[in-house]
Amino acid sequence: MSEQPDLVVLEGVHKWYGDLHALDDVNLSIAKGEVVVVIGPSGSGKSTLCRTINRLETIDRGTITIDGRPLPSGGKPLAALRTEVGMVFHGFNLFAHKTVLDNVTLGPVRVRGDAPDEAEQHARSLLERVGVGDQADKLPGQLSGGQQQRVAIARALAMDPKVMLFDEPTSALDPEMIKEVLDVMVDLARRGMTMVVVTHEMGFARTAADRVVFMAGGAVVEESAPEAFFGSPQTQRARDFLSTIL
Ligand code: ADP
Ligand code: MG
Image (cartoon, rainbow, N blue to C red):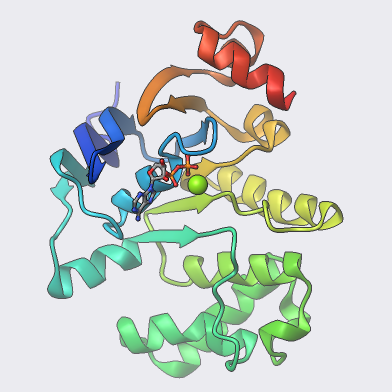
């Protein structure tokens, strides 16, 4: 169909922490615009997988390419890669002593050299889009957790990433704030963003995922469309996992 190579491709990826085989022969190919939800028990390698994609962690074997190019190992190319791969963690990781607006403009101005007024305009429209346009001049600590996480999403988007990685973005939030963050993510998915989302929010997986990847013991054990995965999981491990969370 399409001539375009997949945007993110992991081939035969292995990662060890000492004796611990954290990623065990992971092969994963993510098309442009695809939303992949990664689920699995605690310690199965989901965070490690995310962190290798923007090279917060190195890998010991295999290859990872983004847009056809292998991940750079350092220097300016690595800094450039990190702008192409946006990441949102469960902690909000905002700069506590900078305003919300500054949090969003800092990367574009300092890393990419955007003109400050352009960066500000872009930041304000992104803050508006994630529903916190009126919080721009506050400090992160004055915002709710859900608002802070939406600022974190706007901050990542400000770099015009090719792909967004979310590692349990709602796990630190009070229940009433989970939906407002998931809604922003669903909107992002509908706009065609390529996304890798580690989450236990099965409602999000059902609504927004093109594909569910189930990990266990560092390996991808199952990979299928959400209906198939939730309707008829193929492995006992997946069935056991689903029975603990559903
Ligand atoms: P998950 O996100 O699925 O809970 P992780 O990717 O965080 O799993 O961890 C996978 C395994 O690697 C776990 O056994 C974890 O304890 C181990 N691990 C993760 N990070 C490190 C680290 N920096 N050093 C040593 N072991 C680690
Ligand atoms: Mg994790």
